Image (cartoon, rainbow over all chains, first blue to last red; front, top):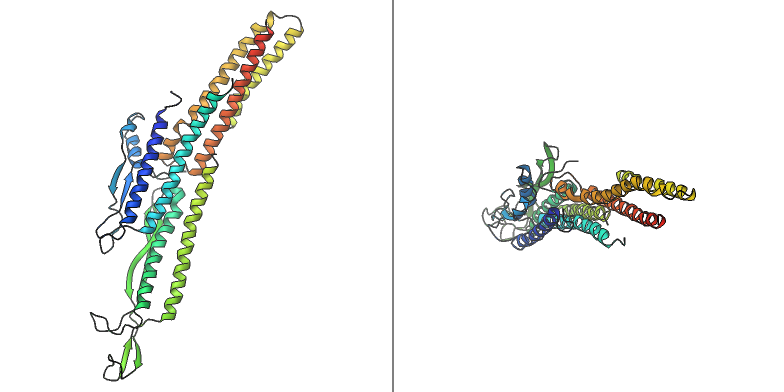
Length: 122
Length: 148
Length: 110
């Protein structure tokens, strides 16, 4: 195992990228909250990864999975066809930020160990 | 501890999601109150020719997937906005353009004081739910800091 | 964390025992006998110490997969990261002490 580029390292970075992308999609939802007919969108990535893992995809192949922007048909629309709930988007923004910090904590935790091993003075 | 696959930290966020749904529901309720207050003196509605009828928002629980399988409470939403069928207010005012044969004007069945009280309740509920969300977020941040 | 202590503790105990034997032997004016007996168990202690460090590093490898599968909550992740870090630091210190001891042994057997 290469200390600096384990598959987990790359996957965590992709998770962080997808989370950033989701933040942007949420911002778009909020901006479109009064547009008739607009249905909210989300970024699916974690679920795609887990489905692939359940199908038995090996960890290296997981790198080929890309985040997808999907329309959330499950959320109910109001009379004008718009399904954006500003409060819910705001809550999702908070969730998203916490997930980002979690991935970053795991990533930096491991990088920390590597750094300590490398800079040990013996 | 089992969460939901593909939805990391769903357990941590459950309270926040419930509270977020309540925020939306309370905001809808506040909209209805605002409409009642604005139309408190509307003696003639365009469609019916009758005075404005007070509206009330009713809530219902939303059920969804629980963490251990099965059904669980995940939030609330506005079920429907019902019309209050109580009687219109009658005021004797023969000079009023909308006075009927008896000289009585019919006013909406809106009690502005009651609406104000309902507004206070709705706002307090909104703030309480917002507090749940902010506290949940702070707790999550605190738990993350354990790793530093 | 307890696991880490046991792994590192095994190494430390072995190294201290080896050093003790060497000191006893050298004070008894039998320098030739000391290195052979000491280095056999010493080599094992060294190997155990280095393995322990590598283990701690790889233990954090699967944590993000567990998070994706919903098996871990935030505080559990944070707690595991922290304990992995402490175990790792401990194992690193043991490894460093082993290297110091090795150098001391090399110095002594001249």
